[in-house]
Image (cartoon, rainbow, N blue to C red; front, top):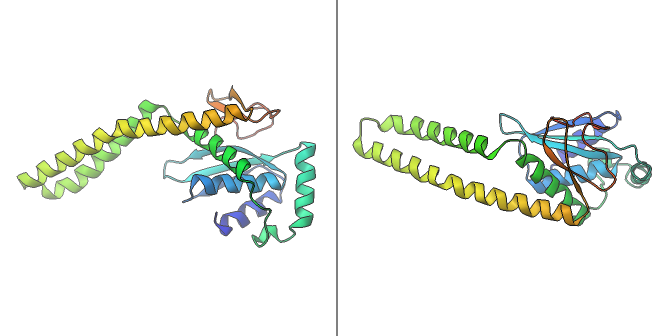
Length: 209
């Protein structure tokens, strides 16, 4: 979890307004830790989505619940230098894992399997074509390019299977923790924490970042 993003997020949260943080590169665990930190200071995880240029947008919104306000007040008193990324509340592994599971599920619902296969197939074809074009005059080069293309395309179903596995595991974690599956304003399936608001009720990011 980059201190740069921690500082940026916490400083934007000082406004008390919804925050969207665009992140160029970070693991799912790092994203979950950022969301956890936001929740330690009076915000709640709202959504995470992938952009067209392979960046991630993390959305958090103010949490008006009494528990969140009390937690934020205590943490602001205990960690006055948190907004500089110097002193932060300790990470709670179970809470971070549940946030990570929500994010995995949310990202997986951003597009359908057919859309992902199409995008991946077009990307593979484009990369192989661009690199293979340089060897178009060579029979061996063409054969190699076609073989590489076929091999990569054959791996796509395996990638989908792996994604299904992680998606199912995340859903099982959230079910076991008492989260509820709901449909947001855009028709996307989401998991809401026990007692949390439905998408579209109190979250300005519901239905899309």
